[in-house]
Length: 250
Image (cartoon, rainbow, N blue to C red; front, side, top):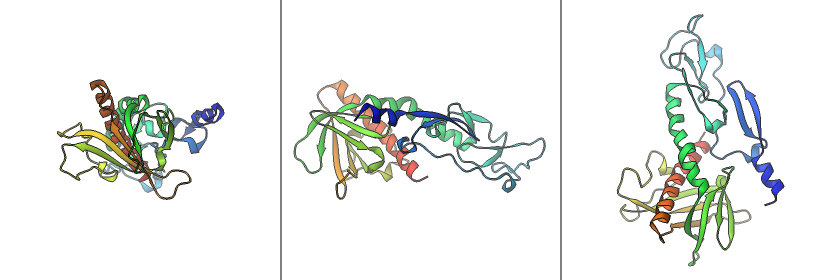
């Protein structure tokens, strides 16, 4: 990849929307696949009352729009200002109680799991039906758009082209594998169960290829530190898959 193309991928600009200042990619095509679009606000004329407590809006009871869902609320029901990284807001923005809870949970991904994905971990990587594997460092690109695999060879997989994710674990009954869509509402194998994540299977659309290409990551087992790093990366990717699914379902 040329430095010019890389610079275009990472270029950002500051824009002002009705909801606040946002630092967004200069080119929309290079936006994070985990991002969410700003919602359309419910028109003032369509919400004479708070959409949570039903308080009537008047001169004293002012209406506010939640920056995440776009609905109308009174100050009591929409007073929290919470970071909303998925919409690229520079400062914390006003959100209703329900959306604020979701944004707080997502903040853990950006503050913790995202750093793990960017740092990467070592896996044995198998492409397609090949019987051979290659030790490679797997990490997320700085703009969050690509899965980078570095070893004797180098590969890039566009995150938005990933169709399915399967978390491979020990401790579940045979055949009980977590699929991409079933990740919603579940926990990583390292949380709340005796199962241990041992790897991950991905299916993605490769440029110029017919059908889906399969990629299998098996946790590197050469040292305790490597195993812990691999397990942490798998748990972080598990969370990322949930966010990616939500973005597509928006």
